[in-house]
Amino acid sequence: MTVFGQWLKIYNPQLHLHLQTLQSSSSAAAAAASSSCNDDSDENYEPPLLNVFTIQWFLTLFATCLPRP
Image (cartoon, rainbow, N blue to C red):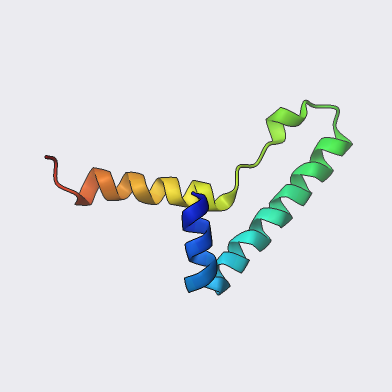
């Protein structure tokens, strides 16, 4: 995922910045919600958005487009 993130930063910096902005605003909202409640911080964990989109893209690619050997 790190390689894809670097690739995205080089070849599509606008999308990379957009995903980073969404991630930081989501993390800030989760931190505010966890500080107002006394819940465990593990329940409010937000995975990096790039990982979520990349995993979904690869699953779709391999499940629907690439032929089986």
